[in-house]
Length: 200
Image (tube, rainbow, N blue to C red; front, side, top):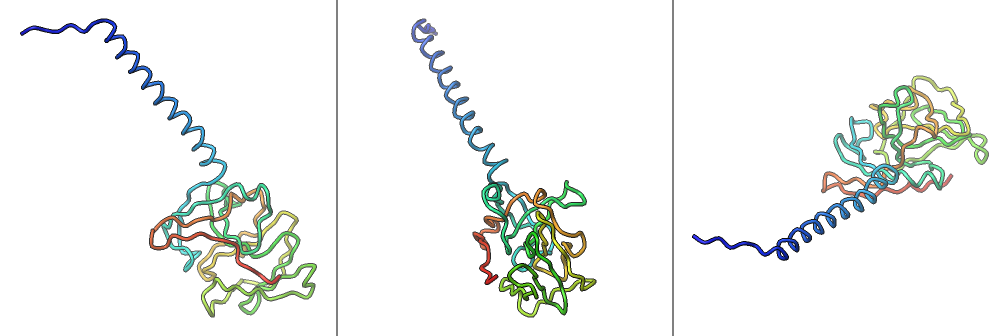
């Protein structure tokens, strides 16, 4: 059987094309990483819900996308659902809802949350349409909690099964990672989230 020898110019072209292909592949990967890594670490980040503290709005093992950049340009708002580092162990992450704002006072009494601020010196009861009807909020005491200039009072939506500011106190802004933007899984519960509208 006769063997056909490659001509040198053809072989050189094949080698050149191979290295061009490798170069283009590496370039595409490098560009993709340059785009994806900053997005992953500085703009949005995936988390999953662990536990029942936010039911029925969030259930165990649901996957969420967190907006990490918005709080660099605006302040957190009452009603925002946030992910933050647990103040007593920053290696853990919690998901809760902002109830009290910096400089305000918060009191939980008779199953209701009362907010005291410059507009409502005598306090106003917080109406929370996102909670199940007749769900009361309880606390071990009825003290009025004063928040510092960078502190937020946070609660889980499932008030009877949530470890939140009632037990570990207010959360400093420096611990906040970002706010919930999207529930991506399960597909039957995909939803974009926005801040609830309050009258105060």
